[in-house]
Length: 179
Figure 1 (tube, rainbow, N blue to C red):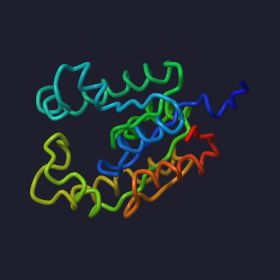
Figure 2: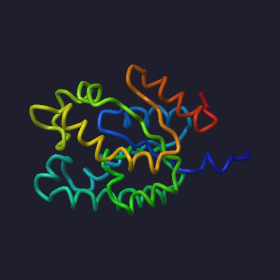
Figure 3: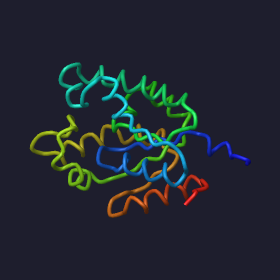
């Protein structure tokens, strides 16, 4: 079997919390017969607790350091994974450089839709409080240029099913899906 080099590159999904990175990564992995990795889950498992607990006990800087180590480890893994990154992965210059080894897809979501999707969850420490939509709008404004700098493809997820977004990723990256 001949394998295209692009098929062996990791795919990293970036964007705001609530964009659908984790669910789309799982669907893509199934379509492409690859492994999906949620970097937040890797960090939480390594830390022995939730992301919210990690933020509360060690702070965001410690979380970001663990996130970088998890990204580095997953980029060495074979077969190349489909990565669901945390929304702030682009904040560290090192992570932006590391993402250069990936096919990077920015899953765009409006702050209103993201707030609706994450409503009722308690594991997102940056979006707690009375105005999650406002918080998400601020995060998007602060990160938008960083997302744009590393993204090969931009796909809007508002009003689209997980299957439709996964299919759009496959098409945009010109990948060969198993199904």
